Image (cartoon, rainbow, N blue to C red; front, top):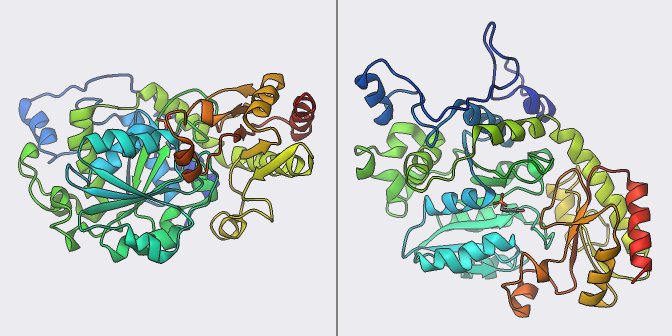
Length: 428
Ligand SMILES: *Cc1c(COP(=O)(O)O)cnc(C)c1O
């Protein structure tokens, strides 16, 4: 088919086309290993000379089909699944940055990603400069160093709910000869496709909306194939010079711009560090992908209705939702997220930290979970959970005040959810 297919169709059809008599649904290849007739046959696979499967840490047909579906949704050239969103973020950055290198990141990112960059990768000798996502171009450009290897941000930040000016970040990254990596977890490709705005690599925690049912932890990395590593061979020797650990293969030469990044990430990082997604988890993820456009519509409608309700409640001090006309990021949302953002709303109650705790205790439909972005409404107080390692100053810099309640609107009926909020707020 030549015609460019719509996202709803890709969610159902992309990545897997069974031949005559083969299963209609993506089969679960629950097998660690694959059989070959001769050692030569298998040797070609190890040399990356023939395509095929030999061990599920490196590739598995179920995972590959689901990765190909996500690549199609994002408009990328290649993708790989990982065991979690954290692994996707780490693999992506570590695939191009090594000890002695530097990363520029938005300060408004997921708490786990912040920790990964600020603490764990720093211990590995990779330093990060955090910038306010709403900074000027001048401030952004000033964050770069000669050893900067990537720029990182989230389309819609979890839990700050700021909207990334992807074009601004892409422009700065490209002016300094490095790729922009965007974590597109909250928007999903249904609501934003960062490659269309200049991003080079997209990461996902598929644990969230993509799986959508709270069933399986997972991650995904998608490459646009657009970043030309060969223009900066000194910056990206891992992609542009022979890999001694893989029979001297030069990834950009052998796999082209469309395949180099993901092949290196699989052949080196997955080989050495593990973190695969299991075929069973990939199967659950795929079930979620099939209904993703329908679900995102309902999550966004509920998010909008609840944000509007909260804004009208006099016990509510503030509401953060980019779908609200007065929101600081409303203009960016209209540009990058014209069909809706996500179902996550942040707000604070008059009475701060204490009021947040009382309110959450009395919710009946909404449950307290560290999770977000699945079918069941849930909420979290980040300052006492996911972000508890951070100081108040760091919390403020990340856009996560001590009073912030993150409410993830599920797929329930909006009137029922609002009634639940109303009775819980009344008890504050
Ligand atoms: C949850 C989350 C992650 C981490 O994903 P896991 O699947 O929990 O490892 C990364 N980025 C964002 C935006 C997230 O919401």
